[in-house]
Image 1 (cartoon, rainbow, N blue to C red):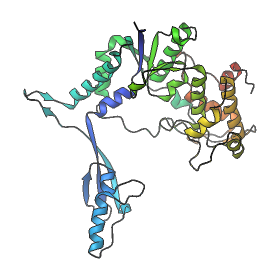
Image 2 (tube, rainbow, N blue to C red):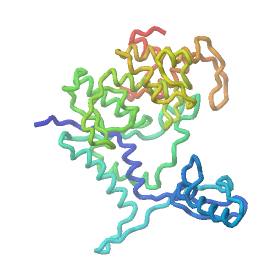
Image 3 (cartoon, rainbow, N blue to C red):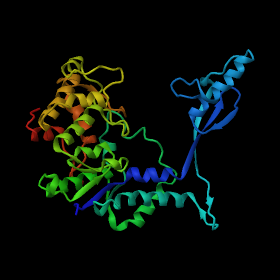
Image 4 (tube, rainbow, N blue to C red):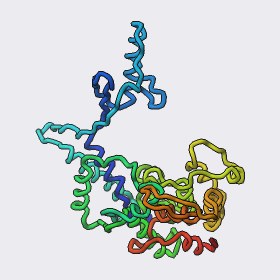
Length: 361
């Protein structure tokens, strides 16, 4: 008989995906000069590729204009507004009415059961953080999560259904993120297993890269064909280091702006004009053979870019100016990106983390 595990489910993405099933989006296009408006399914239907903007309905209209000897209309002549609305009720053959609320609850239940019905799953816990978390106060370079889209209309409906339906399976905490609860529980499981995958009694169910900074067994609910995947300590270290270098665009964590030319040459990496992306960040740490070497390279990159000398730094809110060097910049990103192994405690200064790896700073 195959081994059975308790599934630890990172639920945030599942709530969003389920809630999106209850709504539909479109765009309202308005001609700036005349006020004329028209609704389209999306921007692509209006003007084709967002890069070239030379296709779709607008291309057809312009072709007709050119044929008549008229000037074509520019995409810049229009304003585009996103429209979000609930899907319509549907009526079944037995005259039952299926509302958007019923749809999203059913979608969430199906997503949970897609995990709990796996042959390796004997039990499950849903990790869910509530309330404002500490990272909003730590972020100083740019506001934390400032570019995230609005939550789906029925987000609260799905959340409340989850808290009722699965109340006996919930692991909740105030003031931390679901990822932190996941990190704590995966770390505890790793310690119970004496740092050996064969001894683990839990599987981390997640797609979020933040959680991949912990050694564990992962089940990616977006890629079930991968099955159970072991994340080893060195790989976990590289995952965290990669984030420290590239940042996290979803959570608006900037990371390191770029590598120096010397480091591009040292690690034989191609330069691009798009800053420090995942491919470059992975390239810095990929050949490292120990966690210590992994983070030595992170230190090297931050030190090369920012330098040892303390220089003036003004936070995004502009209330004061402080002096910062490479370690100060790295510390902010570390405290934003490092998930907690104990949700009641701060992760501490990055210097302490580096010192535990015998990296003197």
